[in-house]
Length: 393
Image (tube, rainbow, N blue to C red; front, side, top):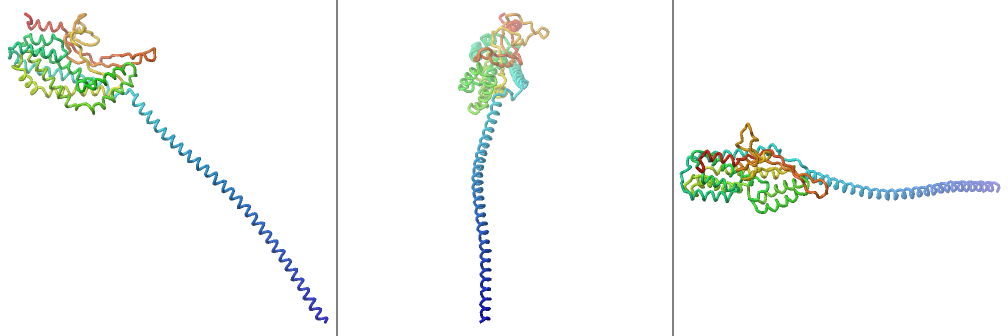
């Protein structure tokens, strides 16, 4: 019994020990579980915090992305606006610029070349046809040619009448003078920047330009002229047609000069003779004049530059013209009130307009500068030549 009691006692002790161990193990497990749960709660708190931060970050990123997109759009708009304004400024600078594409010296040389060609053609025709002077004795033919010449060309009535009545057998000086006057007078119109002889519609543009010149700055109407005349060439007849048309007209008038001077048997034969022998030179001269007009009208902004011929019977002005027959030692010896008979060499004038002072709408003022004075033959000179020829005796 005693042994059995000891066994039971040991068993009880073992059971208590196991219970104590199990209780201790449960406490350790509970502590571990509590720590784990606490850790999980902390992790969840951290995760929640991170999620909130991530959400806040995403919101901030979205806002930043939106702000960036808006800034980029504004930058693109500003860049486009800057490019547009830069282009407009360049265009305005181009439009308002008074820089010319050709120098005055080049234009002057063109005018001198035209004058040289006028002289060469007139001298050639007069010299080559002088031997035929007097071949026709028809008074009617000479008078009819003089009448056609007076009607067709603004030379006045004296020159055609003198040609038809003077004896040119021994001296062709008046014939050459008449030819130079004819060519110079016609080319002063043909070389205009506004070739109204080519197309009637150009007259409207010329009138519009004249009104602009009264009020607008030189740079504005000058640039308008150059642009208008440049593009006008695409709608007017071809230049070659204008050259040929002008040369044909000149051929008829040259024939009239010869007929009025007593050279030629008939109007048709004389015209054909001039066409066959001088048409090429007259076409070249017409081309020079037309190109001159295009150059001065379409390439010069700072001023209006053009050739000028002095009308017959105008009073001589030394500051605007020069006497071709003047004594080289005394070039200013033309008497007061002396009259011009005709122009033999074209002049070149530069006209620059400036804004009027005072009121805002004050008219522009013009400033003229003769780059080349036109050469004229005086009435007194022609009288001396006619006296030497025995005219009227």
